Structures are given as C-alpha cells and as structure tokens.
Amino acid sequence: MKEDYLNVIKFPLLVSLSLAVIAAAFFGLVFGSYFKLGLSASETVIYIVLFAILAILVASWVLNLFSTHSRIRPRWLEIYAKWMLVHIYYNLASFLGYITFQKRQQMQESFLNFNNEIVLSAAKNINHTNILLLLPHCLQNSKCKIRVTANINDCASCGKCEIAELKALAEKLSVKAAVATGGSLARKIIRDVMPDVIVAVACHRDLTDGVRDAWRFPTFGVLNERPNGPCFETCVSLHTIEFAIRKFQ
Ligand code: SF4
Image 1: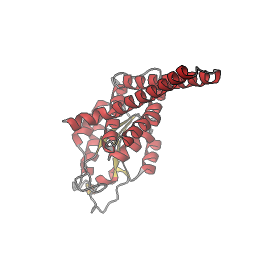
Image 2: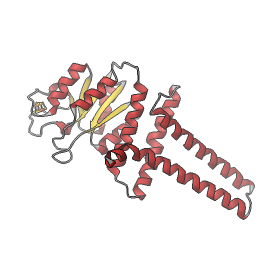
Image 3: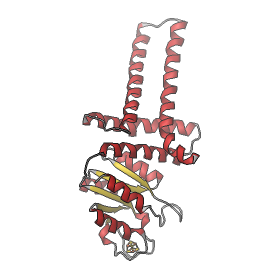
Image 4: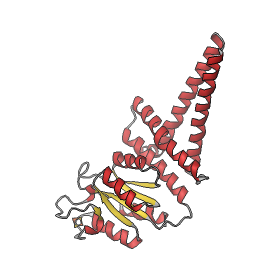
C-alpha cells in the first residue's frame, strides 16, 4: 500500500522539494550578502535575474500540477509546460532522488503516472481517431519463427504469446498497433503514423525514455511485467491497455 502511494507521489514530491531547496539557497544567499556588506549594483542585478528564473521555475511547476486536472490553453503554453516537465523537472527529480538514494524505478513509475494524468486530462471529451498502440518486441514468444517488427499483422495469431490478443484488441478498437525493437524504430513508426495519442508499453527505463523522447506527442504509458526477467517474454495487462485506449475514444 505504501509502495503504491510512493509510485504516485514520489516524482511531484521530489520536484517540489528541489524547488524548495533552490528557493531556500537563493534567499539564504541574498539575505546573507545583504546583512553582511549590503548589495552592490552588480549583485543586485544578478539576484534579480536569479529571482526571475526561480519565479519562472515555480510558476511553470504550478502550471504542470494544474495540467494533471485540466487541459492548459493556449496550445503554446501546453507545449511549454510539457517541455519543462521532461527537460527540467524530470532532471531535477532524478538528481535529488540520486543524491538521497531513492529507488530509481519508483521515481520513474511516479513520473509516468504523473505524465498519464496530464495526457488523460488533456484528452477529456475528445474523440481521437488516430491512436497508436506501440508495443515492445520482448512481448513476443522467443521461439516464434515470425519476426514481428513494425507490422503487428505479421503475427499468425497462434496464441503462444500476448501479441495475438493485442492484435485482436487493436482490430476490435480500430487502432493502429506496431511492435518496435528499439528507440530508432519507435521514432520511425511515430513519424510515419503521426498519431493523436500513443498508448505505449515498455519497462520503466524504456518507457520513461520513450515518453521523454516523444514529448510532443501525448503518450500514455503502460508498464509491462517481467516474470522471466528483463527483455524476455514479458507480458502486459490487456485490461489496462483496453481501458487506456477507450479513454481516448
Ligand atoms: S502469437 Fe504471434 S507473435 Fe506470438 S508466437 Fe504466435 S505467431 Fe508468434
């Protein structure tokens, strides 16, 4: 129960703490200089610039928190908030998590949950027609003679792995589905399809990298399960995937 809670709260908590530490350091520096020798003209300018950066960081974070409940308008502000999320706040949380010995996977899962909330709130009341279900190659049975890459319809639906059920699910829900063997192929598939929304399946690291890499596309992440170890005959909850796709239709 505590683990589940941390999987949700850890990322926003680490970002908020990072900003609190930066703000405390800034005000400590300013008041320290002021009460010691007073502030010279050049110091005043530097502190004003630093304060402006701090204010932008805090305001943009508040914007991101807001975006987990409601869609941000106008569009440029939405893009700006997403850019800050994946390029600034993710790195801030990673750094603070690293120096305080936090579990990396838990932070990544929390980041993915946070991102999913943003994607869902932005998609509220919109029927998307161009949805891409992007799957990792490790879902496939390792003994399968067919190499299913990119086109999921290459699967012969023998039922020895979940690719068959995912293919049937994609057909039922009329969404495009593709299997990617790595980041380069995933990027190519996204470029070719130009989806409105991506529902992506992968492990913690690949999914986090993928969501950050494709940050301009709304990407709902679903973690796979690894009962046989990493990258080998993994599986995923079909129920979660169907739930996610239906949220966007
Ligand atoms: S379901 Fe498809 S991908 Fe899986 S083993 Fe059978 S043919 Fe291969």
